[in-house]
Image 1 (cartoon, one colour):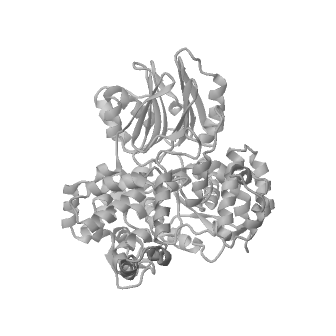
Image 2 (cartoon, rainbow, N blue to C red):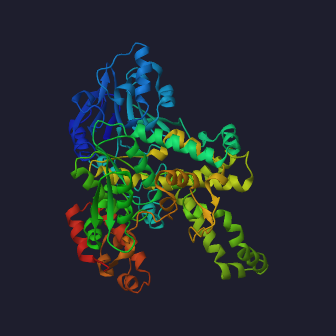
Length: 623
């Protein structure tokens, strides 16, 4: 709902008020409704507000009392219950915001207990006057962003890297930026593409004092939700029981996240997950509810599906038309807001236009369906795993035979190449995925090994791949001052999903369903809940994602790279353009153009309009 920032300096090093002003202006799109700053000695906090709860000035931030202060970005979905409890203990309130509730909760019970009790999405900075420490905290799933960087005499933090860039020189990490070509640029829990700029990890507290980081500690891990007793309870249940419990949990989640004093919409792609969110939101009784979707020109457009869902639940729908030329026009702007090359999620480009449409129609917040695929095994790579043992049997036989002859296995199956690629991805990501998988496998030690492997893969995707989607939703939504909310990431829904046996997530079907996992129905309980609401035909639709041709839908002129950022950064030699011109994979050139755009914006610091002109002169959309 906001943008937050701040500076924590060494003792007797005053905060430059111009820096605070620059930080606020850089985050204006995140909070156009109000802005404020707070200073105490060598520490300063800044906030830009997108007002969603208590639209009056009573909810403006920073929130302070005495020597303590808070800047908060996000939503606490249980703040009303927490407020009632605090009032019973004698606390009085001057606003109806969750910010004031969080501040009072920390003051009364301390930071650790407050973090244990809140449910929702958040990133906040709390200055404790007694210890002169500033605590940076981020929610369990990493929904809301928070970055920080060390300077010679201070640490600066903000919701976006471009805000940090107003008071320090952002330096692109050339190695990690290059690895973004392998979709590694936006999946890390801690790294960014800028040297010295770190993320507060999901479920982490970072303590700052006297211009430096003092400690980092985790207050919550995704694996904390894994509970053997809960798993056994769900294992003994029937599928109908599972469906009914999920329906109740999702309805409660949607109702809590639909609470806002500003207008609320829903992003409806036409798929199963957003269809379920839309149907449940319609039942929540919001009269201002409206669906927003993108009509991406081409045969894969889901606009008619989205319209049919909206009509079925009685919700009006607004459509953003996205033409091939729009990709070329918006590519640079999307990169500027995303702060990574547009590679992992090309849907970020049309996503920004849908967000702008919602903003133009007077909306500030939307519900979305992210998280279901990771938690309920909806991705083909997860849903197909039970079939892989059979599918890989011939390859396993080849490995056994050819492995007896040195070099033959690699020559036939590219075995060494495949494993080296896995090693590269591990090194680039600090083996974050490997560590998460190991922790998850240990926590799932009470289930058979094959199931533990699949459940752990789900946890890894919910910890890494989901980060890229959450970054897309946050950055592209906030580019138009739109906040996304995620009912599938309610803590109670996540706990249910992580303790749900695989046999309830993946069920055998009588139809082909999806060629990538034939006769295996993915996200079975999610589909069952939707079937009860809108019928089996819609619930049985296979996953299409958010279809856009993206990088496959353009052709890049190799001459554009001559003397450009990538040319200079990676030490290109004579014949560079000829080599690119002879490359037989246009998609690779499109990815390189994404990297080029990122480098020009954030490393060469070329103005956005200049980079936009460069893209239009160098890229042609395919018909």
